[in-house]
Amino acid sequence: PAASRLRVARVAPAQTRGTMAAAARRGAVRKVTDYVVLGAGSAGSVLAHRLTEGGANTVAVVEAGKKDIGRWDSWTVQMPAALTYSVADQRYNWDFHTVPQKNLNNRRIHQPRGKILGGSSSINAMVYVRGHAEDFERWANEDGASGWAYNDCLPYFKKAQRFMGTDPTGSTEKSPYRGYDGPLCVTNYENPGSRTNILFDVLEAAGADAGYPITKDTNGYQQEGFGPFDMTIDQRSGTRCSAAAAYLRPALKNPEQPIDLFTNTLVRRILFDDESSRDGKAPRAIGVECEDLSSGEVFEVHAAKEVILSMGAVGSPQTLQVSGVGDRAALERAGVKGIVHHNPLVGSNLQDHLEVYLQYLCTQPVSLYPVAAWTLRHFHERVAVGLEWFLRGTGVCASNQFETGAFIRSDAGIKHPDIQYHFIPGCVVGQLDFLPHHGFQIHVGTLRPTSRGSVTIDSADPKVAPLIDPNFLDTDKDVEDMRKAVRLADEIIQQPAFATYKGKRLAPDAEMDVLSSSKASDEAIDGWVRESSHSAYHLSCTCAMGKVTDSSGRVLGIDNLRVVDASVMPSMTSGNLNAPTIMLAEKIADDILGRRLASEAEDWYVHPEWETKQR
Image (cartoon, rainbow, N blue to C red; front, top):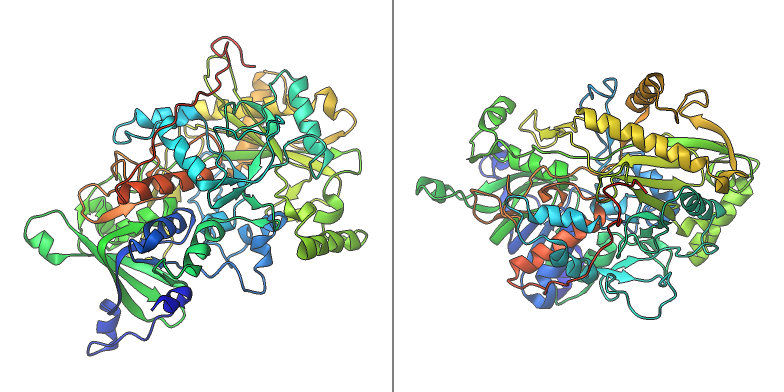
């Protein structure tokens, strides 16, 4: 009945088959549905919504995490300014760490991944960046990724988006680059004077002082330059607009969309049809074996049409590998019994963005310090801004505090931006705390690193975290590019616009010579980057099109099995990855349903003298 689709499915105790050991090996079938979607994150939420529209298909969604609303601490997910809370602990977070990084002084780098409805879109920084048009042109020219040119992808960015801001150009006409009727709420603080902190305006002005262009829409015609950053925030309520809020919850509330949702449920392995292998045919996925993490009961969910992995760049390759899909020798070493399909590229090609924070004291009392740091002196101010958000959904807490930023090119001869700067009007210490002084920081990251890593299992037990090795800074080019990005960032802070705000540099140490191009300066910057850098949390490309899947996410060599998430990207896009992941899921959902939006022939900006000028 329709009413049963509105609640989170609870799993009845598994029927034993003689002994508890037998039950653990193979549980009872709890559901047979058209599609089984593994993961209720950014891509999984899109698929659940689109595949069930109009009652066209039945879908079961399996998610290891909890609900994102209705809990005592759900405000830490829904309040945009509280974004660091879930990143810093394990309540809604897989809380992974990399293996020791040989080029980062053997440090293990934190890799939070969302373990909650909405996945990482429920714990990320809400920065909505599509990437550059040239990224998708590159995709379309890579083996196995045809059909992903920019003009093929733009209609799906627009289909997903509900832009709630105002056009910063002052035009009353709708932009051909934005969507206005989609599920995903996107807004921005478009003009100087409208933002929650004056330092956001100062950053934009400093970019102009340094000779960079001002762009009004980094997701539109011109990514290159300084300007407002879009954010996935519902302007009506001042809350995070995760994929769960945009896609999954509305579908669950619609009695015409038949979805069964299993939360707090671990995917143990993908199930395959034994008969197909005996007949010499390609293995065929028929369902998934799950475990209720509350009761420990094991059960199965079967798919009449397809099993779709949407577990992210860590979870999807891990689940393939523990299910017997991957490099035969590596799987056997990990203890996997029964190799289903040998493909040594599963889990390879891991890509991620690396960042450092340049931090400065602020000489004017205008930063986030009074409301962001726990101090007795400013306790009442912190309480006041919190109450404003709880009562009205407005104010400082309704912003993710990444209101402006920049995309620039590190050198002449680079066609489109390869450096991204995020900016916060405060100084963060670790993941959660703010420095108890007025300050600001600029996040410095390169966009197209050449280093490649891997995700590999070390155990056949799906509860054991896989070995995550981004292999950061493994090429000389990546080291040189980070060095350039740091120098260019410090140059921006030295501009006249910051003159009345810039105090002592805290990181790197004020004594470090950053701006000169001497060997000593190079070595000092490189050493600081190796000791202080961290992930931007943009893991991707581990089930890449052309290597593990085809251009529609179908797993090569296996029937009825698909991967739809950031892991199928053939290469990283230039920026944050949530927006392109949602676009990708929208586009493949249409592929599954046998339909396609018409391409849109919109142009994009390239600096007219990019071959000879850096700015």
